[in-house]
Length: 240
Ligand code: PTJ
Image (tube, rainbow, N blue to C red):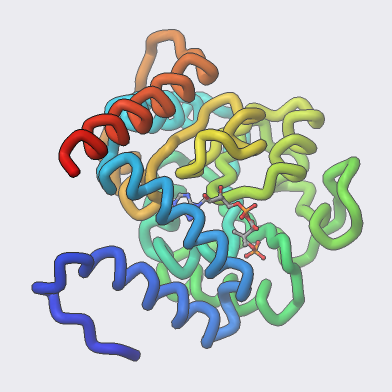
């Protein structure tokens, strides 16, 4: 592993990359996960690599919906575990939520490595390893899920999710919350609540923030996030 000095101006960003590379080396993160992260980084750049107001509002609403759910579930993949292994376990505790491993590039080996990583970070029960159900409308392995977790969940947090699965979960009638830096992704557009923030900030924020009781319109919130990005680009271009 490269030793990154804390004084480096892009220290946090480089640490994230290192965590993902380590994830790949350990068999937790998929190689495609590196590419997915690169896309995320680009959008993070556009929001100035900090939590913007619209994201904080979505984070607060997400906390409110998860706390009021009957069977809330956090779906976890190889990128999530590489970036916030402890954070996701703590968040599940705060929200009284189950954790289920649900992979796009599913192999038994990755599933069990991710389960172990979560357990090492304090998770007592990890769902999804012995799936008895399928998310309708998806082809084979991507669809596999547990009955107690994803299949019967009413509110589901699916960070860094693939668009097909987010749409299929909506089709099942679930309330879908995502964390996705790209406000234009299919997941972002089909979710009920989209948190346009880096997961490394969103998860600790959701540990602290008060639930939002007011009405929340995801389309409006997404447009405001895009507007923020355009405005920032305009300002930055004037500074050159
Ligand atoms: O571990 P697996 O096999 O389940 O695979 C996971 C990935 C992420 C590879 C898979 O789900 C995938 O291909 O996802 P997509 O379709 O690339 O979508 C991931 C979304 O997350 C993209 O819109 C990225 O912009 C966004 N993203 C990437 N890194 C971050 C992020 N959003 C928030 N925080 C990040 N750190």
